[in-house]
Amino acid sequence: MRKKLSTLLLATLLLSSMANASTIFGGYDCGQWVNRPRGNSSPAESWVIGYLSGLNVAHERARMSPPDPLDALNSADQAYLWLDNFCRANPLRKLDGAANELFAELKANKK
Image 1 (cartoon, rainbow, N blue to C red):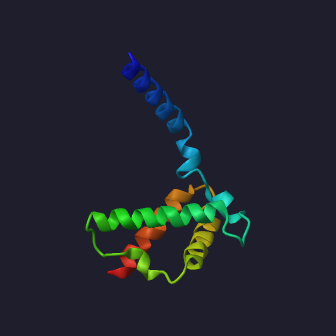
Image 2: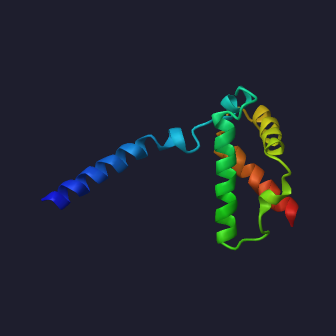
């Protein structure tokens, strides 16, 4: 009985956390990006760096080519500037889509 109760509790917790997943993963949009506070690394900026880093790790673990696309950037500010330009031109896009576009461009330019 205790095992069933634990399983039910775990399933409930997982389902409730999945309901909020869009807030955590990719919940920002380009409108929020261009209007973010600049300076002390906004939550959106931290999210972007984590997202791009995750893409890069997944890319490398899959042994895809070219290796380490993020190596083309000299600083996070370069990614922020690219996203500023993209999001001004595409204000209705989600930030995860914009970051995917940046990553794809970095991969294409590194070949």
